[in-house]
Image (cartoon, rainbow, N blue to C red):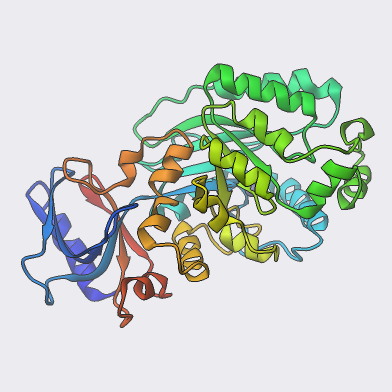
Length: 418
Ligand SMILES: [Zn+2]
């Protein structure tokens, strides 16, 4: 971090309660023209005004100001991992290692969740979509001003488990966690994946989500093995499920498609289709017509598993909803959704920076049913923003955004900069 930024923060705190000024090299908002050399005026936690900076020299911080960020997909329980679980492939072996790790570290799950929440906040993330298994996120653990959408993971391939699992899902949605002195927790459901959820259970979970107006997140079209299992009832997942004593031939007769999961998902108010690495062109057309389903692209996790190029450009081209997520530390080095954006900006030079910013701010908040205004920097709104260090020599905005030194250093929330 550069000294001017630290000096600014010290002054900002000293001037608490007064009208305060923040002059930055760039101010970016989702889907809006980037503003260069801007002065933001803050008063009592609100953005009072955004105007051209009266100076352009040393007074302007070497910084980019962006709205507070949204990470649409992670599993906080794995935040204790210091490096990804290896090897990544075959995918079924990776899942086995993941399950073993979770079982062994279960007593530490709560501290892992706390660690993930703190890490997310350091990276400027104030809204988070998290997959919850054994340990629910307590609002007391969520940093003030942050919101977690806790999607309860449900999986089961046997008909006789269904009523018990539905009860679990319903209990999770009943668990009201009002906003306390700290952050808030909203609830949703996560039928895990097509290879781990009985079709009748899936149908019932969707029905429950519709009746309760709850958001749903599901891992979908993640691997070619998953498609093969659905279409032909064969492949690597058969052996995997048999090995775990979970195989149920009735559930995988073949002749099923990703579309069979997308169609019910289109009924819920807000749905996240996590990964979508192998969506077909027909799936993409379907998603163009059902923008309540957002595909969550997890770029560095996608690279970790060496998938073929993600259909992100095709999805955006037809107007389908897309957002970004980190997935967990089991497949990613950290929980910085900004670094995900940097990778996508480098991968897809045709996508504009303001367009990409929407995938980690307004679009991502909306995809989970959260207010989008918390992720915009506009006059009269609460000042929720992230200051990115931008002291590299990179000339144009895109190079500056992609530069490895351009990283979140402070988050401003209302009248506090942390
Ligand atoms: Zn995931």
